[in-house]
Image (cartoon, rainbow over all chains, first blue to last red; front, side, top):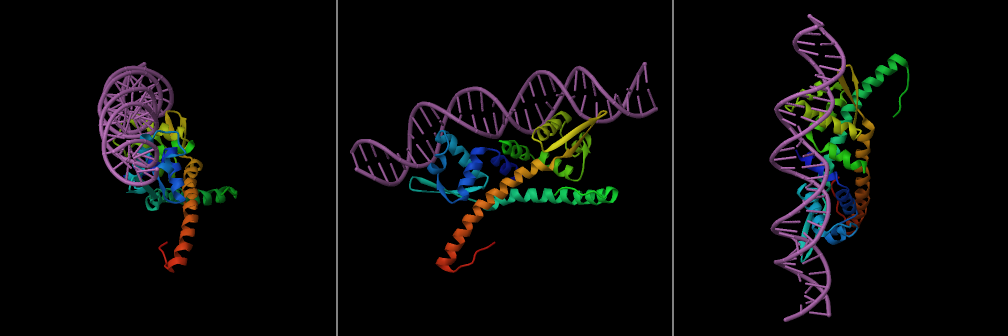
Length: 109
Length: 109
DNA sequence: ACTATAGTTAGCCACATGGCTAACAATGCA
DNA sequence: TGCATTGTTAGCCATGTGGCTAACTATAGT
């Protein structure tokens, strides 16, 4: 499933930092790599993963590759949480009613 | 970081399915494992990962281990998306203003 | 033309992941 | 007591991940 690779991509601090940086606007590979100690080829693997997963896009102009955030696929992952929480919340709602019925107690959130 | 292991845990369909199931209420390991072809020891690894990551909790009573969802740590990951989107949205807002200024055009969403 | 810059390709390495089987508890039931 | 159920432990295996160096390509600047 696509979610597999999306979450996999997000499970690395370097890649999350790159996404965060790209949230503020496009950047070249060099700019993106600069904050990290890593050798360039290592860093490029991360870029490659993010691109294969569809979380970023990149275009090379001259010898410079510029990356941009692909917000749509990030939203797909976020939707999983919304769905998940909807399921949980509906049950919690029921439990809540039950608890209120049985004990009259209030709960947090 | 905690997000590393949380996203790592979510990057597997079996584990996401388990979380989804637990969203509807507690279940024993046997009940959780039943939908999957996997051998029990393999499945237990997934349970172990979910528990180490703090996404579920489990208690053994007699020979039966019952698992429950730990919604709080799931929320931590969800928050990352919210933060991320906030950054992006603020810039998008700026770009939006810019675009409207320059072209008077409308955009989607 | 030369040199510096910005990536890229290839290949290596250690360790983590996700699956398996086989054998072993430990509890509950007849 | 004996047997079935429900996990658990140990150990194996193939593949994936995240890092590295060395060497190469391609563009830009002088």
